[in-house]
Image 1 (cartoon, rainbow, N blue to C red):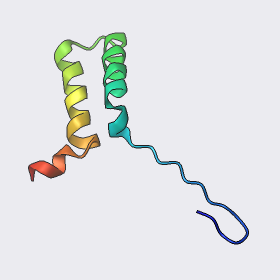
Image 2: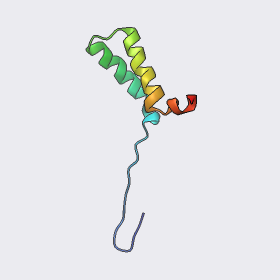
Image 3: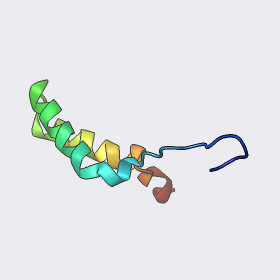
Image 4: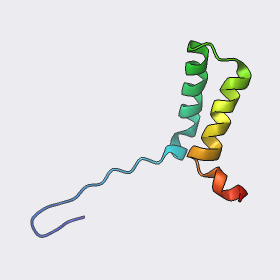
Length: 59
């Protein structure tokens, strides 16, 4: 946005556009801390439901 004396630049980060990368990180992090497949799956599904806005659609 441009004003008379200045310019304002806003950077927006949209996590859902990086879902694949976030999931890959969750898998590697889960392996690093010793989580099982079910626990890693929980992390990924939690991400979908609460971080990506899926919880609102169920109600």
